[in-house]
Length: 128
Image (cartoon, rainbow, N blue to C red; front, side, top):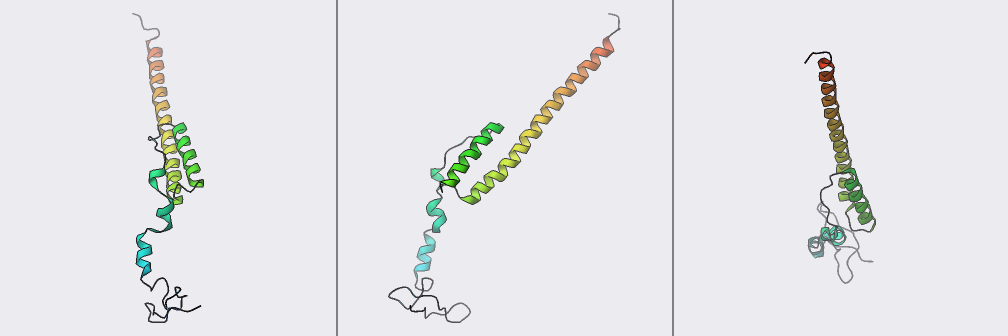
């Protein structure tokens, strides 16, 4: 097979396989810019328009459903693995925030109940 006769950036011969019918490789034949403008494999496969529409998750169950759908789309090649990774990472953070919110709500209720109980104990034995 013929080798590319162009020089690389270092000024040395490229030596990559030449495109059939040419004395230049794909990078030096002028087709590299054309191929790059098409966006590569990632854009051809991972199209955001094909993703299922989801409302923002409000519960752990909603997050579970979003993650399950993301897994399906990832396995079917509809979801970019980097996006799936980001969904998983953000999902874990969101789950921690949900847990903290639940703990805060429970703590506020508990503090209110303690305050009511303390007030009731103070009022016991107080003549009316």
